[in-house]
Image (cartoon, rainbow, N blue to C red; front, side, top):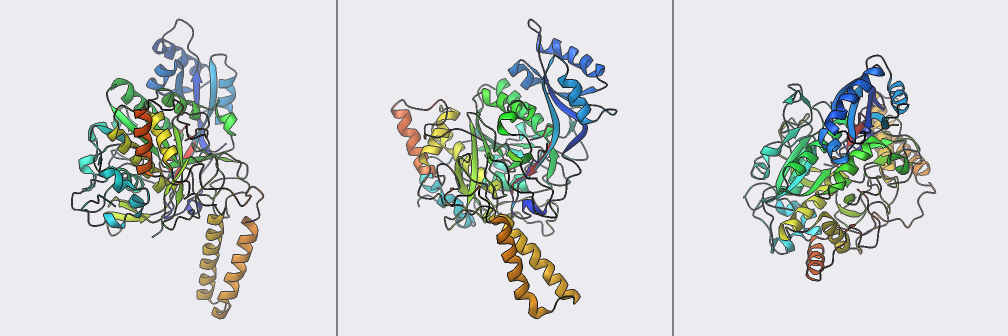
Length: 549
């Protein structure tokens, strides 16, 4: 099994990421232990330490808040003598173990490609997504408030001058810690060396009307940065995501007055576990525990591979990429039965489907995800010009539009529940803007671009004549289309999402109407469709997650 936590930028596209050393962290496993009747969770934790010792392992970490909420003990188990397979086998043989699974790798899902009330920010007019979702019409009623929070679980959020006023520094958290102190190797939550989290945060809540840069969907929301990626690349193990979930759960349970509109996950993991099997996986159970609090939406990016969410992938990822294999599923977008999960696909400014977006009935809503201008980290690796703003594409860019919209709605209606916000978002979606997708278009484009680069290299080396270039590119194009286009999984009718393009104005009116009439779905599914939930699309059981650019 493999979990890839992926940020959703299209700058590098999911296909060009470095190969993973393995599907999961060897010698580690995530496990959930039973708590005996009449025994407290804290007391039972001592028994768990002994249980790990009996199988030649130790408890590397206990997720206390998730454990207290669920009445079960969530732990990371580590052994220098046993393989992951041996650990899981030994754990599952014990009657006190509910389940055990690998610590998969996760990857960010990036795909970067270089009305009414409008703010005075000089580049705000270039943020086409804000107008596409009719955010300016809602700004006439509310521009957000610092009483409402949104959480960015990502690569960190740089203390950008266009974000600083809206960052909830007191709640900032870096999952890479040693004995509670930031690991000097990774720095604190604001050391965004990949730029992904800063870009996501800007779309959600760049300060509006401050005369600089851009504006977010919500001008005044308080952003909680939770850093789960290191400063090396776009991959991490899922235990860091679970640590983030534990931190957020603790924040919510210890601060009963905090209003957290949504969590933004523009990341993902490719795993060979079916959605039904996943319900018995530690990764899913951690999300489920947070979901059970019913205190916030969980917004995730759908993915950037042009495949159907919730269905097995029909082919291996292209040559040169180890991101997934045939038969795998993307998570957390393929999670099922989470009431407050929202899965977000991507659309372009011409109302077409983003060529890279994952799609299907398990995708709740579409949002702008191509050519999105937002804040960027000047310390990001490869940012030689120390750019403060950058245009990027990916479902990682689409998800924060929805997160920002959720925070805007909660600002206008502070007493609403997550399910009411979800219902309003889905009911208000513009169904006229929900195009048919061209599956695997991303792979076709990647194959053509990759092949063209190879041809140009050979021309430069003198092994191919320049006049043969057009013929060779035509051949590559034909082969790419023949390889990826015919898959029977696509019937020529599938849409980007179940409901259509995010429309904040219509969502606002829908929510106001439901509140006035005393309506509101407790399941978040009053739009007539089932529920489901990307950071940078954006999780870690020691499974690898990938940012969803």
